[in-house]
Image (cartoon, rainbow, N blue to C red; front, top):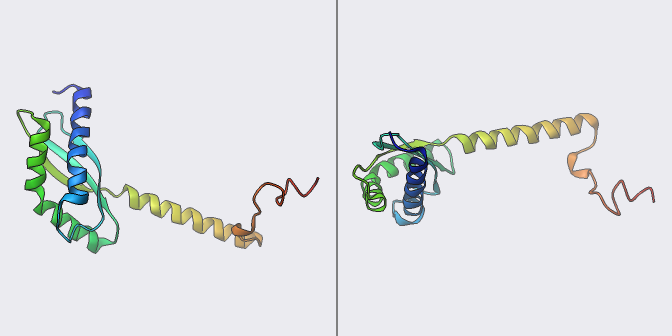
Length: 140
């Protein structure tokens, strides 16, 4: 069982090693705009769960997943050189849905704000900013 501080340090090292390679060092056109978002290392250092995200829909996600699997050997080798540990963790890639979830929440909140503004009769864009032309400056 590894020390939690050491695990965190190794996770950061893995992230800093593979993120630039995925972003700029692979010539696979299937990758598109892929970002490595997080690395979680197993306590026994045997597996590194690499979370990634991409712009686009399911098609872009599928292509990127295949490209990452294809590049796994190159990424694994880079991690082995960077870590210099007795055991190199096996990379396992997982699509990170948190960015998509956050975007859906933002879109829902914007839609609700529009619906509320329509119900009240004033669009949200017509709210004047505070200052000389705004509500506070009108009384003076």
